[in-house]
Image (tube, rainbow over all chains, first blue to last red):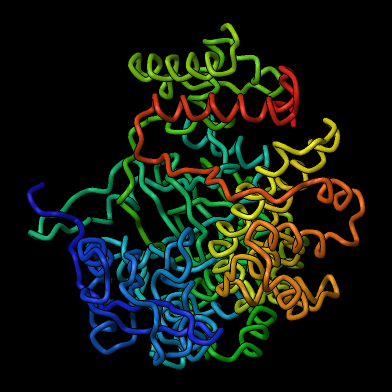
Length: 399
Length: 195
């Protein structure tokens, strides 16, 4: 690969300052900051497919990045009211109000364009940084066809924002689902950790484009998000012809298996919307969605209940599931090589390490089976051992 | 059963009733705003005063527990529970960014913030912090009785930025904290570890 996956786009900046007890947004330039380098880092956004869209919106004064740099002066008297902006949809969830987008609704137009049910979705569940992290992708003809035949119609703009479509099966997080995944993938994996399982054929239909127009295959492990932050890492793959789903009179190969999102308040964004796309794909007439009309959104949930289908694994019917055509965004910014930055108790590598070192803390927790593929490299083991020694030294204990 | 349809349908039907986007945005913004000032009033003033005060081990534990609980409330996404330190930081340290929260919490405690500001106007920083704590904890006698035993001390910068320091420096600093906590709780006991 010679080209990069992401490019840098310059955007306008602003600062949120206090003016007589009221927060106002003041557009800024690099001369307003004490350290210009810090300003420049924030004013340039690394983005993929939707970078030009964000850059264009910023040129029109609809999108601002908030640099972390310190201002020379905080005595601004004129600015926009902070309530005119949506500070959550496109900011990092860990740094709310770091990116502002002008919005007359509680969630911005881009968020509603991506997730038509945004106004009845939890405030913390947004597109967030996936807007920038989505690389430029080239889809196969059949996937493009699937998107265009199933895309939801909106009042404005005419259709929902592009995303990678996939026939998705939603399962509850339970032992029965885990047993199916184990049978399907041959690996003891679980939907508990919000992982996502995809078919190999679906992955092959998605090519990532570099800045030099090279076509790359998707890596084995990557981050995937449905609507409203229903995100997960791909934890396994299967042959598409092994897992099918019967919906009405149709039998479709399953592209993606994910969980039903537990108690998260993003179910309409995922399951109702995916169900509506499935209905449209199967020839049913589906209502046009006014993304600003909350009453209509609530009524749509009643009108279009989740689509049920029968899951078929290796020719055997195994139960009723929620099915739909979900829309996905990719994130290839993460380094997926195994490492332990913070040994969390439920990480399988941490369990292995603690087993080897006979770390007493773990005796209180149930031990799970460990798959051979997940065994740690000797170097990593040595690093963790040294870390554990330090902890022991610090506590004044002996290992 | 692969999917509990009854539960799922119920959740989909009712999930919009609990969604308050503006409030969520305000809370998330507050998450960052409250964290610093609230930690500051507790660690830089109260903790320092507690070190030299004549308190029993149980009183010290009660104070540390309340300090931790209040800081935890400040960093939670759900901002509905009263953060006492937020009121103190607003009044004593003039943290106007958190005015919204301070006024909301003051009304929860039935407290007149302007009056408190006027009363503490001429005091020194450390005295302001302690006085404000006395007022906000007036309905919590178990904490108030401990706070009343404290004397105002100069501010100490308890938490220094360690992110870019070498690991040896961080270890030294942790060891120093350990010793400080031991002194704070009295004796050489490891009680601090089990707080």
